[in-house]
Length: 83
Length: 206
Image (cartoon, one colour):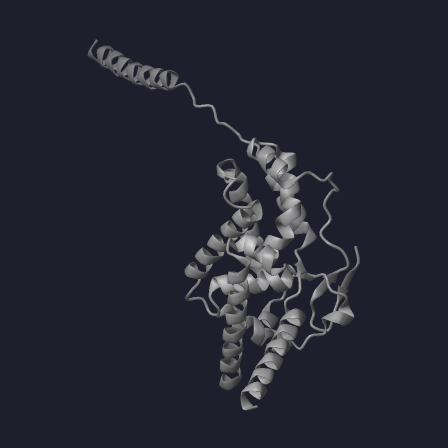
């Protein structure tokens, strides 16, 4: 008798808890703006900007040319002073 | 779309998120096409699962902002790894929930020292699909219940979310969680007992 009472009580408690879960755990709708924005991010191909690397040889040539021009000017100035 | 606000400050939308209507395509075909880079097919899968995944994450984290961020990561990860998905092994939904589960687990690990913020402290609530008159729920009761649920092991939380939020049967839950229906039935019973214990612990503290 007591066992049946405890069992009935526990069944009631279980049912109450299930009712509470049904009331509290309801489906929520995400923000429609978020859903739409994420949808477009997933389905629109990402625009990629590929930076073209400058020609390394051209850069090297310019540096070398500047240095040589500098050295040439210094030498020229020295010769002019000596004369 | 009509916006309604109830006494708890929760914004209700009277319809689901608006996305263009698409023809029905069997899921396995959509997955196969998406794996080959068909964005239309992936779009279908996204529309089918975005609200479910959002709900799962929202109830696991209790934070609408994190739910958006993690939902976004789930679908980006799914998009980049769908070609590795093997549909002979597990259903696509189970695979998606598995990604969400792993991201939520990482989030909990990274935020384990962060203080828990009560639900009413959030200024922005998600958009409930309930009619306002049906949503007048005792805020304290709901808060205690959600707190108790989040103290349960992740698989039990998942079971409750799938069963009550998604309204799935034990058989459907079993498919997603890759267990037998009997195992889910038994897990559900144990979950209710441990949830009751957690709730009584919360009651005693107050």
